[in-house]
Length: 216
Image 1 (spheres, rainbow, N blue to C red):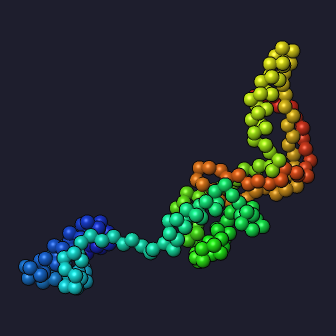
Image 2 (image 1 turned 120 degrees about the vertical axis):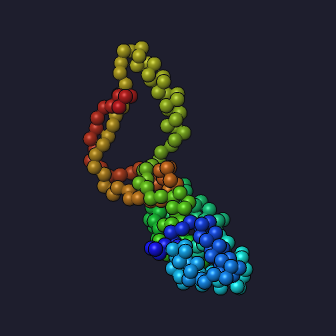
Image 3 (image 1 turned 60 degrees about the vertical axis):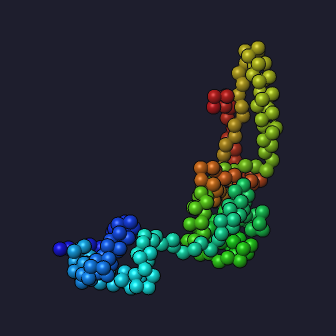
C-alpha cells in the first residue's frame, strides 16, 4: 500500500484520524505500526500523537490550526500607518521625496513607533491595508476646485446661452507640449482610489496650442 502524506489531509480529517489511531492503540491494544499501516501512513507518525495524549490527554489530539507569527504592529498601529499615507505625502513628515515607498514607510514606523520591519514585511502590511503602488495624478498648487465648479455651474451656462443667441460656437484653448519636469513615478494609495500628489503648476515647456470644443 502506498504511504499517504498526512500533510495533504485537511485539519478535521487529520484530527479524527489522530484520535482513532491513538484509541486503537491505547484502548484496543493494537500495535502502533499495524494501526498506521491500516491508514496508509508512515509507521512513525503515531508516536508524537501518543506522547501528546500521554502528556495532555484527548484534547491534545483535537483539531488545531497554526496561527502563524504574531504581527509586530497591533491593529491600532496598522490603522495609524494607513492614516499617515492616505491623503498625504512624505514631505509632510520631513522627507524630501513626495512619493510613498516601502523604505519611507519602514523608516517612519521605526522613528514613530520604534518597531523595525523588513521591506518585505512593510509590503505585506500595506497590501493588508488595501494600499497598493499606483501612478498618481498631478494637481497644481494653484488649482481652486471651488472656483472651477463655480465656473462650470454659473459662468459656462451663461456663455453657452449667449453663443446660441449669436449663432456662435465655443472653443477652448488647449495647450500641450514638452515639459521640463520629470514624470511622476509610482506611490502608495488606497486600492481602487488613485492618490493625488500636489506639485507646483509653474513649469518650463514648449507648448502647442489648439482649439477644442465642448465635445473634445
